Every structure is written in C-alpha cells, then in structure tokens.
Image 1 (cartoon, one colour):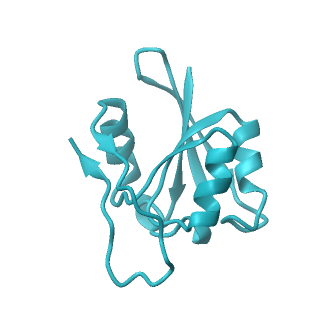
Image 2 (tube, one colour):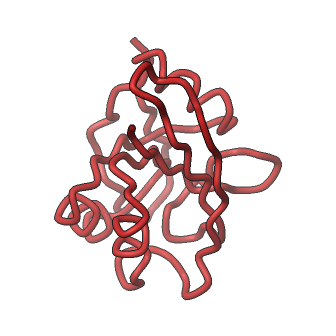
Image 3 (cartoon, rainbow, N blue to C red):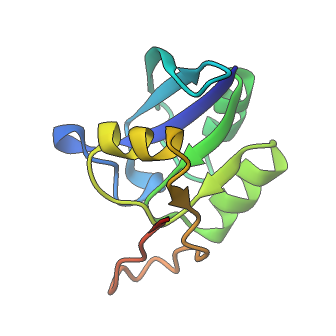
Length: 125
C-alpha cells in the first residue's frame, strides 16, 4: 500500500504553488497501483515549509507528493520526512494520479524561486 498526496486547487486542478493550497487529496494505492481510497485533508494552519503540513502528511502515511511549484524549504522538509516529491506538475488531479499509477510522471527537477515567470513541467514518459 502506498499513499500519494496532491495539493488541490480550484476546479479539481493541482494547486500551482504548494504553499498556497488549502486542501490535499490523499490517494491510497494498492500493491498493483489501483486507487482504493481518496481522502481530502484540509490544510488549516497554512501550507508550505513554515507550517506543520509535512508532519501531518507523514503521520497519515504519505510517501509521495505530486506538486506544482514549491520552494526549496518545503522540498527539503518533505524529503526529510520520507516524502518523495514529483515537482513541476500541472493540470487535473484525476489525470495526474492516473499518470502516476501508470508510471508516467517524472520529477521536473526544479524547486521554485517564487518568481513564477515560467512554469516548470513534470515530465510524462
């Protein structure tokens, strides 16, 4: 069993910046990568590296975070808690989790410098 979190934005789209999200979808995946449960988690105390959201996600058993933009601090905190981050993703969260379960998402490799002049993309193999 594996748990994957995606920061949820408006209209079922991934939140462009991890530090701005108010909710997460947490997907529980079976051994054969089928979705067995979806839970929505509110980020009541804010988000990003200055909140305790990383610890909350880790306590819930999250092992992977599919993210849009996120800063180096948040990336470091999540990694230190054993949460692997796939950065630079965009689009519909249902599509992203399907791509993940089909092994089609690859980390975009860059953290956000908070300028947002260009969008980084996670790669689809």
